[in-house]
Image (cartoon, rainbow, N blue to C red; front, side):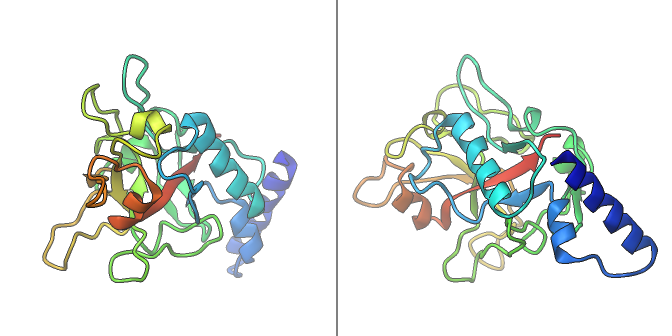
Length: 226
């Protein structure tokens, strides 16, 4: 698999040097960042970090992106808290079109990153719908503060460290950087607001229905860590 990836890189480089278009399949093989086209389907119960990583890996392989170790951009809370920024490798990361969305971890968490609706593509190379689209799916699960670090213990921001599909809440980012309306300020790609329950069960912000209710679908950011 590693040999295949190296060959794709050499082919892309040769074509670019010659001023020729790079085939979509070759670009796809070099993808190192994507948003999941679908969540596992159990709300914010991802099976912990291990289950979330496996979901990224499964979707990448199904899309023909092989030879990489994938990590979901997620933090956890508590005594053994994990920072999302510490588990995704060093970068740089590029989308399925070959655009570098961030050069490093620091660049990713700076105003210089290139994350937005048009650039934060799925593993299939598709744009994820956002504000103004039907359905709106711009809420991406992160459980993280804007600097990519975990929240302190206390208020749940990770749906019980990604094991709850009922009670709790999860911090989400907006992949399209859009607020509630055109006059709202640009929102964070990784730390916009916590999920919230529906009217009948306001404390249950980890259900699939709750995630969809605020413009989400249990989607994840996935980064190649190698």
